[in-house]
Picture (cartoon, helix red, strand yellow):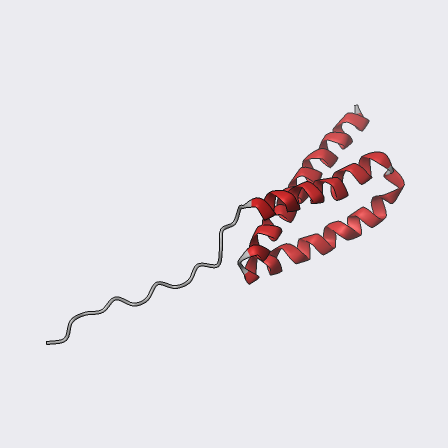
Length: 94
C-alpha cells in the first residue's frame, strides 16, 4: 500500500514589510520630499528620480527576500512624495 505524501511547501519570497522597508521609506522620503521642499529648482532631477524608482519597485518586488522590503519602502516613499506634492500644489494654488 502506498501512503500519500504531501508536496513540500513552496519557499516564501519573504515578507513585504520589515525593518528594511521602514528604513527604505525613511531614506526615500528624505530624498523625494525634502529636496523638493528645500530647493524647488531641483524638480527636474527629482522627477527623473521618481521615474527610476517607479521602474525599480516592480523589479525589487519580483526578486523577493530583502529586496522586496526595499521595494516596499521605496513605494511608500513615492506615495508620500505624491501626497506631499499634491498638497503643495493645492496650497500654492489657493
